[in-house]
Structures are given as C-alpha cells and as structure tokens.
Length: 236
Length: 384
Image (tube, rainbow over all chains, first blue to last red; front, side, top):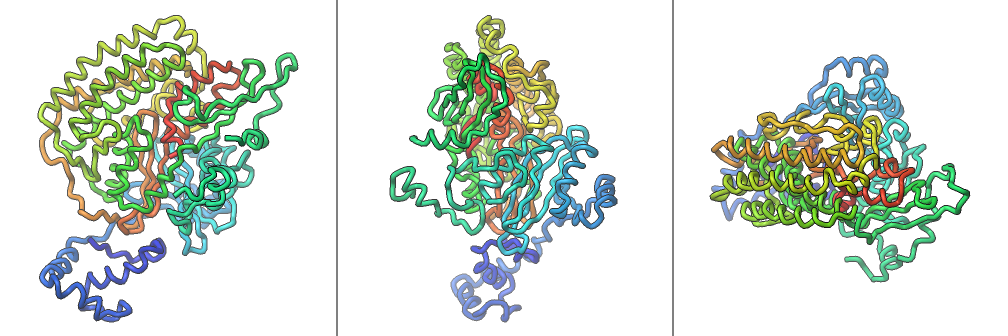
C-alpha cells in the first residue's frame, strides 16, 4: 500500500528519503518520467520479472486509496475563548480522528496551560512528551496531554521550540510534571526553566547524548560511560 | 556499585524538617537489590531514627529504550515489545498498543475480537492483582497469600497458554483484532475459572481483611487525598481508593466495555488498607465482566480489514486504556511510513511511583515497604 503523502517531506525520516522516489515511480511508472534521477532503469527493473502483477499493483491501489483523515478545525467555546484572549498566539485548534489539540506559541504556553487548569478545569496532566523533527527550524514539538475530570475530555496542547531553547516548567501547575519533564530532558535534552531538580532520570548521570533525538542512531551508546562504569569495551 | 559518595552529593531532600532530639540524620540506601522493591528500584531514604524525612527514587536500571526501539521497527514488529514493559500484565499492554494503532488507522476490531480481548484483559487484571496481593502481603510478613495467589494465577496462565501459546509475554492481540480463534472449550475454561476463583478470593480475604496484624500495618499508612492524587497524576486503584470514582472503562469506554455491567469500587480514606479493598473488589468485578463477556460472546470474524503492510496516514493519536495499574497511554506519531515516527508510552507505574515521597514522609521505615507494595509498580514499566 503506497500512500500519497503531500505533507510527508516535513515529517519524513532521513531513512525514508531514498525510498520516496521509488514508491512514486511504482505508483505511476509511465506517467512521470522526470521524477527520479534515473527513471528508465527504475521502471525497467520491476517491469520484466512480473509484468502483469505490476500492472495490477499499479491499478489496484489507485481507486482503493482515499485520502487519509485530515485535521479539521475545532470550533468550540473553549477554543473561541482562548482565541479571543490570545489572538494569534493560538496557532491552530483542530481535531484529528476526533482528538482535539491546540498548537500554541511557545511564549504563551505556560499561561495557556495555567488557564486550562484554573478556568477550563483541565485538572489532570496526563503526559508531557516531545517529538523531534530535525529538518524543521523549530525542531521540537512539546506535547502536553491534558484531561478534565469535569468535562471527561482530553485535549493536547502542543508548542514548538528550537534546539537549545527552553520552556518554563509546569511543575507549579501540576506536580506530576516533575518526572515527566525530567524524562523529556533526559531523552531530548530540552531544559525547563525553574524545574526543582532537572537531571537525568532513566539514563545514568554523565551519559552523553539524548537518545530519542533522530540524530542518535539506535546502536549508538555512550562508550566512554560503558567503559568507565561497566569495565567492558562495549555494551553491544 | 561504588558510586554512593557522589550519589549523595546531589541529594535534594528537604533539609528543613525538624529532627527528633537533634540526632544525626541517617541516609539509608534501599535497593536496587532489595526484595521488597519489586525489581530494581533504588530509594534513598533520609531518616531521623525510624522516621522518614524524605525519599528520593533512583530509577532506570531496567531501561531498555522501548520508545527508541519502536521508532526502528514496523508497527507490527513493535507489538511484542510492549509485552515486556509491564510483564505481569502483558495482555493489557498489547491491548493498549493495538487499539492506538487501530485508532490511527481508523479501523475497529470486530465485535467477537473485542469480546475476546475483554475476556483476556480482565483475566490479566486478575492475574496482575494476584501478583500484587501475593508480593504485597509477603512484604508485610504474611507468607501464605503468596502461595495461594500464585497457585490460583496458574489457572489463568493455563488459559493464556492454551489460547496463544505463551504464559507471560503473551502477544495475544494483533493490530485489527485477534490472530487466534478461541480454542475448543475456551468458554467453559473461563466460566470454570470464574466459579473456581470467587471462593478463593474469599479465602484471601479470610486471611487478611480482618487480620489484626494486616490491619495495623495498612490502616492509615501512606494516605493520599484526592487532590494530591489529581495533582500527581496518580491513576488506577490508587486514585479510586482515595474516593475518586474514575475508571477509563466507564469514563471513555473502549473495546466494548459499555456493554458490560460492573461497578467501580472506591475507597474512603486513601490509605493502604483501602487500596487493598479496592483491588480485591476489582477482581470480583473482573469476574463479573468475564461472565458477561463469555455468555454474550458473538460469532463472526476476529480480524478487521487491515492492510498487510501497515502504513497509517500522517498524523498523531493519543489513546489510553485502564490497565491494572492505572492509565496506560500510547502517543503515536505517524509520518506515513511503515514505522512509527514516535511512540510514547505513558506508563501508570512511572507516574504513580512519583507519589511515593508524599506518601511516606513522616511515616516509619517499615511503612516504606508497605507503600511501595501498595503502589503496585512494575519496574519494567517504570523504566521501559
């Protein structure tokens, strides 16, 4: 199944990049001679061994592939209230597959979260995490998953920051943020200003690098730490 | 490990607490190799005599980088890995993951698969609570419940083994439904277990509920009030024992939980004893659910229409289920490829463990053991 992905380049993995032209060729082999670097061999390779199946494969997915679900604008009293107060600071209020989320400018994220708890009664901070997009200028998405016991509703608040930038901690809003922010710091190297004890939580102190960044390959590890602390050449 | 000296250097324990008789405070290291930490948890205790002034948890000894592994495997390949997080409730972990990917794909498991999932997940809840009860009671000094619980848990594991071939890390479900049809006699086995188990549960209670030592060791120990629970993000039986009637199976029903009639047990005082009662009652309710699910088990397909190569559209989804330990959430970001761009696991044990400090401050050292037990943490899930 090959999905048409118009927005993919922003979110594409580095490893996926070489694959992309190949799948584009497979979708419409004859129509786009100018897509790949070397279109003729790419078409010629799959064609000779199984000529009928490629025709089928090219014919089948095309109709059976409706567009994936798209984010839809989220119109509600809550988003309207926030928009009225913060204006363009609320960059986006959408739902995706029925799940609501807000994209908020990093300068007001603390205020918005405080407001979400105090006025909108989102009293339970479910999770804080991050996603790394190395190709974007604002490399990190910080995601706050909030839940309201009163409304039985879940909303994600997202903000985007550059590498090296920090956010204000929300430990004073929700105590649970303490360990969750430490984990984000541990795995992504994002610091939170005003955090009562921002240090590594899952990895040992003195570990080098932040494993959940995309430029940290899965086999990489801190050899120096392993050699000093475990007394072995390599943990692999 | 010979790093005790530098470890104490960054202890950020609260120094303002008044000490008793000006005695010198003692820093005691508990774990990581300690039988009542249920794995490899290290707790640094600051003591004044027997009174706990503060604690600090050192975790990560079991960190395997599950989230990183997820980014480097396809959706289907990552499925067995989640069983290894909370390894006493592997079925629940798998259910949460499969459901989240299904949500991302915008498909739903067929009714029969949903019922099978409910039956196995509730069996798994009982098994998980049995491990909790056995070890928790053992920590406090009652050795018999451990043998009773493990003896009876064997019946559940036998059903798992007959169903999918594995006892502990089951990998029972697949994205889109179930891979295996129920075996011949599955329904009878489940019903037989229900009838067999209820008297056993009374037996556990006969050993503990009115046992004077048990009551003295658990009543008023490790109290959490509802406000603290919400602020700390504590979920599951710990939250319910503090009087908050909240269970994801009722609040945001997933699978087919809206079809079943069951109660959410709650406590009043939020102490260790109430948490014990809540979990015992949860086992009873799980039996009720299994009964209803077996009796109403619909026929039909067990697998939804899911492409062979799973490639969700670009987007992100957060979905959570009520695992035996609390809210188990998965946040998955898809970039349209065959591998998840990011998998985040929101583990209940990790978040609940954070409440330990608040619960044991001002209590005695012996209560720390009781409180770690009552939190029902699994370090495989805390560290992932």
